[in-house]
Length: 423
Image (cartoon, one colour):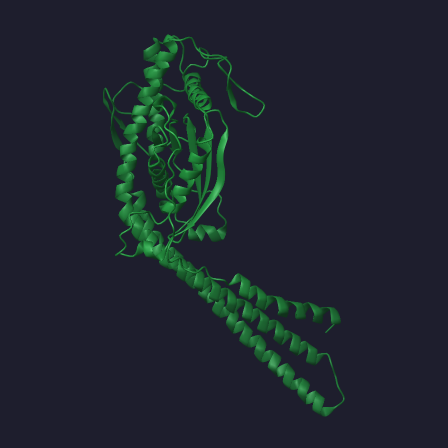
């Protein structure tokens, strides 16, 4: 064995046990989790300056997963969570009394005074990680950061009297951070945000009539360049259209509330099972990793001993016997190390089986999503498909309503829906 090879093997023997210690750490279970209180606004704000908030259904985060992550994610569960979690955040924000209407919306492009979007980066019963972005109607970013939380073991105890979601701290932190940004706004800025939101909505339905009221600056943010005339009849018509849109979205909140109520019992059970699996999986993976590294260390030690003895040929008979014994010990170490490696791989396969067994629990959650009959102010409309499909159909119907409002003076953007009660 060359000196260079000996040095490399010696280095590996030193580094591998250290890797086993650092890579095999197990997250300890959280016994209690402090839930921050919802902050209150520092001053009373007139109703006409309260900002309306749209919280888009979250991105479930299942499109760009690597091979290992695919085994840990169940699309049925994630799609349900993407609808459930915005409702939890909306409830947290409403508790502060600092906002106007806080609505869960199915369209991430919907125009609102403040639009909040999220992506689920990780979710099981033990650990939640969300990427949250919030921008106002001007396009200015309020928030762009990742939030993490770990559930307490107490959260899943049947005797627990807490009314909090196991990850309530995450939602409260987001709500408080958004309030902190809003607190820095003066009345003039609030009024500007609301006006920009109104004009953007108007431009969406009547780009020609409202051209020149808004421009984008070099940062890509909207700037009001001129104001509509007081009592502008076109703006009044747009206002009525927007009222109808808000009425529809308010009606959809009943759907989201109903969905949240239906999903919560099976979802809580899934998270309870997932919590136990997550903790056990961490321990299993750590043990598997430690045994595989220990096995690799033993194999390297055996190779080192075997070749070190084979490459020397001492004349002394006693020394030759010692070298032979060393080679035999090296062979045993190689075989023993191989057994440990196999054991680690088997445990990893066992982990995969545990993960796959959980997928059945998530399939019932997607089944809770059903077509809804929406009672509008002047009619009942049956919207079919997913929530997103239903909202797209509503937008087509809204464009048709707009055409009626203005007497078809100009074509509204997008395809027109047939004016029937069923889309």
